[in-house]
Every structure is written in C-alpha cells, then in structure tokens.
Length: 132
Length: 455
Image 1: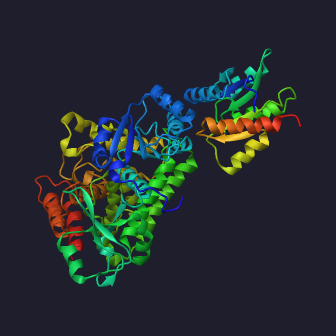
Image 2: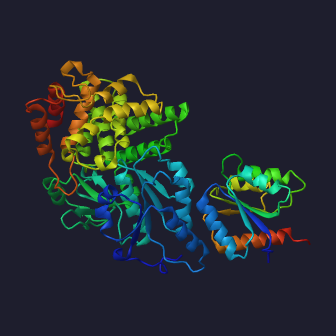
Image 3: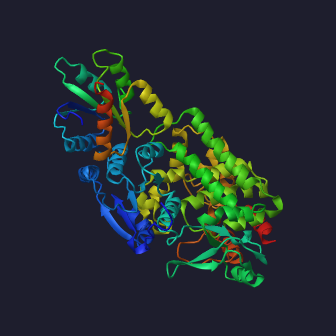
C-alpha cells in the first residue's frame, strides 16, 4: 500500500486533465495535492525551500520544460533523485517509453487513465521504492 | 473476443453522440444520423470535464456511444485539451473531429491527443461518412454495411464475379443486395444496368481487395480510390492549424499531388481516355469528388487538346477550390444556386483565397497552376470573376480549368436524384456550353473534346 499522506505534485498544461487527475488522486486518498502547469513551474515548486513534494505525476509535452526534461533534472540532483515520478502522457510508441524510462521515470501511464490504472501504478512505484 | 461471444448491435440501438456540432454540420449529416439514436452535448468544457471525472473515477463502465462526433471548438477551447478531455470520458468509443476552420485544424495534434481521425469540412464529408459506416460495420458484424462505389465499366459480363454487389435506393433510403458473390453476371443483367444508366454499383469495403484483384488490369475504380486516398493523405499531413510548413514539407505535398496525377490519371492507355472520363461522370455532388474529377478532366482534356502540361493541369484541378476552406461552412455547405446575392459575393472570392492560401503555405506550384486557379471562374464571353476578362484575355490554362470545372458541374449527380445516361449527360454539356447566350467556356475546346467523347 502507498502512503497517501504524501504531497503529490500534478504537472500538466491542460487544466481539464489536472482536474480529472486531482479527483482520481482524491479517490485514492491523496488530499495533499498541488498543481503546476509546466515543467519549469514544477521544478520551482520541488526546489522551493519549504517544499514537501513527495511524488510527481507529470505530463510529457508541455511548454518551457517537458516532463522528461523535468525528470532528468531531478535525477541529476542528489536531493531530488529519489522522488517517485509517474509520467502520464499520450505518447505510446515503444521508443518514447524507452526514452522516458532512460530519463528516470519510475512508471509510465498512457492517457486516457482511470482510477484503477493509477492505483496500480502508484502501488508498483511504492513497491519498487520500498526499503528491502 | 470470439465471434460467437461478440454482440451484434441492431442499427436502431447504435448511439451516436455529437458534441458541439453546428446547425449546418448537423444538416449535412442528417441522413446518416437519422438511422441511429442521436444524442447531443454542447461544446462546454465544464460539462465535458464533469463527464471525464465521472468516467475516470467510476469502476463500473457505463456503456459508451458507438461513435462520438465533435464539432469546431469555440475560441476559448484548445483542441488538444478538448481531445484529451473527451478521451478521458470516452475511453473506448471512436472519436472523430468534424471541423471547418483550417486555422484550428491540426490533424496530427488531434490524433495525438486522442481523436481517432479528424475531418475538415466541406471537403471531407464523404470520407467521414465512409469512416462512420466502416466502423459501425465492424461493431454490428456487418448488419450495418460500409460500401464504396465501383464502376460498372470495370465489370465483365458473362463471368463469375467473386464479390457481392449492392445498390442504394434513394427513395427508400436503404441498400439492397444486387449480386451474390460467385454468381455469373449475365449479359442480360449487364445490359440492364447500362439501360438503367447505372454507372456505378456498391461493393462492401471488406470485398474491395477481391475486387481490385479481379479488375487489376483495367480497374478505373481502383485508380479512383487510390487517387482519393493519396490526395487525402497528402492533405492530412499538410493541414496543421495554420502552421506554416517547412519548405521540404511543401515540396513533398506538391510532389505527392504530382505522383497521384501521374499514377492514377495519366498512366492510362490513350485509347481508353474516353472511358476514364466516362467513369468519373455522374459522381455524387461533393467537394472531394469535385476536386478529383476536375483534376482528372483537366489533365485528360490537356492531353486531348494538346494545351498545357497535363500533370500541372491535374494539380490545378486538385487544388483549385482549396480557398473554400476559408469560407464559412454555412455558405460552402449550400448549393451555389441557393446562395443569396450577398453570399454569392463572398463565394466569388474563393479563387483569390485559394491563391492566398497556396502562397501562405509556400506551396511550390508552377506559375501556370496559379494563373489557371486565379481565373478559372472567368467566362469566355464575359461576366465571370474575379476580373471579368473575356476570350483570349483569359490565360489558356485558366480556360482549360474552367472547362474541366464546368464539365464536372454539369455531369455530376445531386444526392437523391436519379442517374443520367452518358449520352444525355453529354447532350446537356453541349447545350449548356455551346448554345448558351453567353458561352461560359472556349467553344473550340468543348467541340474538340465532345467530338472525341462522341465516338
């Protein structure tokens, strides 16, 4: 099971997709959810002094900084390298999946998503990240 | 899923949902929609988000519509966001965009964000109708068929036809079987088709490969289908929400048009050139058909008359009305005879709009193509537009395109009207083009072409 006290950062340039994601996360028990409209703003939120972000769910294609560029920045920085990162995107080609995994995402969900697929993805990531 | 387990849906239970389709679009598809249950949603993002949230949170899947048709979004809605929201709500249904504003129409973006296909009106009405039927045929296990016309000229009497045929009865608004696969098409039946002025019959799209194989040495139908498919695919890559394509993309578009004209119009035995023209006559009135027909007539007339470069004239035919994309759909969905004088004035800007569009998209088309398009509505004995030029002041390529354009206008068939035989059709062309008070096109061209077609 995952810890739903964690603060989740939802990153998507589309307001409607963020709204749906926030509702799905609420169904999974996540009440501490913040939002960003692109990768750059997400980076600013994560690196802020008082940041509590403990999980990132991000779109890929966004202005300023993409989801994959964001995860690369996080993985390159010791302080943020361990933050769980789920990419939710319309990109479904194998080459794209490989690119995202290489960049450091923990899992990948192809839109359209629903509560049960998100639950599965969260559980997988927590299982992977759990101390052995 | 096994065939036995698959549920066959009767057509009256098929649900089509339209989202934000305007009055003109609904009118265009009223005949198709009338066969099924039709539900409507407004183009209202908040309502759609609610639907998306309900659908994504629900563990029990609600039955989705069999098809979702989505109209032109309002200015405050981003098409990518619209597509993703709808896809979150309808995770299984095919969702098709039906739009008329080319500056917002970006097929790749729409497809990437969750639409199954996107159609730009007024040109793509027929491909959309065909797509709807093809999808429903699969869902209903053939109870709803998807047909495509094939030319009667491609059938050989006294041979067994390895495919079934159907005809459409416009009065009853339904398809009926006409020929069963494996049966011989008797001479008598074939003659009957000719006397009944049937220039085309319908084939189930599933059986098209069998038909292509059957008629592979002479198929006019296959050439026509391939011309249409290639042109649509070239256009698909090209219409990208007003983005200016890269030079190499523009070059590729023109090269694809040239190749389509070369392969499917010009590479045809010269002695059968009249058959090729006959096979295009009597097509149902439709913007797409008009572009393909005019391209074919313009290229073949160019060969017959020895005027202009047939390939370039074919390209002029394909592109000559693209400016209609930039006119309101309420106007282009009307028959030109029904336009008010105000609307007519707007409509008459389309040749100039076409040129503006071709320049804006930086299409490397030749000068003679641009000239032909600019002046294709000038009339030989005056009264045309945009410059009201007369006789030999009209560039010769434009005279040729005007003839091809008019020839299609006079020989095409209005939806729901009976077919007209070739002879009558040619007599009508002669009457309208040679015996008019003010001859609209160069009579010398008309006489020469008709003398070849009359043989």
